[in-house]
Image (cartoon, rainbow over all chains, first blue to last red; front, side, top):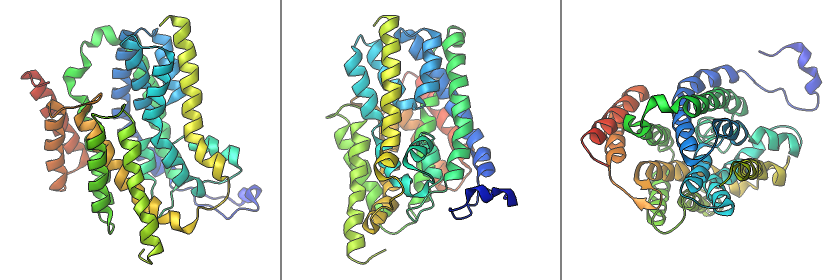
Length: 237
Length: 106
């Protein structure tokens, strides 16, 4: 929906923002799943020793499910501040690679781009990827927004009402995200060379799971994509 | 950890995560990535997604486990391979995982 009033964006190319609404539409069903994971985070967080308010504030400020779960797991097992921060940082380290890839597709100065980068979560980043090295930032914002709202709401439900829900493990919800990532991966595998890269990434991650703290296997697997340097240099697209 | 220490933890984790997510934009700003990096970025989703699939399906902390979750994900994967909708794949995966767990599979 572009209006003639958007001349205040003078100096930048006109930008198509129409993908924000489709982003919202795909973000809602995924957000419902994210909300269920949030319920489970709320329950686990309170069991680990957080107050319900702390669990909700953490989800609102951090917005990185796996990193939060990593930190809270360390707290629950009696670990200290430093190990909890490290576990969380390692788990979230993949966002470093995602942020670098995304940056040229953002607009504005570096602080503004850094703020826009906060919208990145695995699902929204993968969906907004155009497949040619660029990203649709409005699809990213649109799909991330409902996920954020439902993540915080789910955490609140789990943190304040967890006692009524019983053992959330029982529901099998931990199978949701691998299947979702798998569906995104199957979409990626059309590109040339991406099957070998996916297989190599999976093997690297599998090999490192028993050897390194959680989070490192995924970060290390992203390094497999560096073979793209050689392919480019060799002239292949 | 005391409640006060947990507040500190939440603050530090929030700052660290924001820095991690913002580091790329802060370093690159409005510069374009070198053309050679485009080849890396087009391959990055495949490598990251494959690693996320295996770690979320098979890792329990630092232990590899082929258990209820792996069984459910395998069933969901089969549903995806016959080009059925994602929602159906998710329902099958959750159902199989919950069923296996009810049968005592870890």
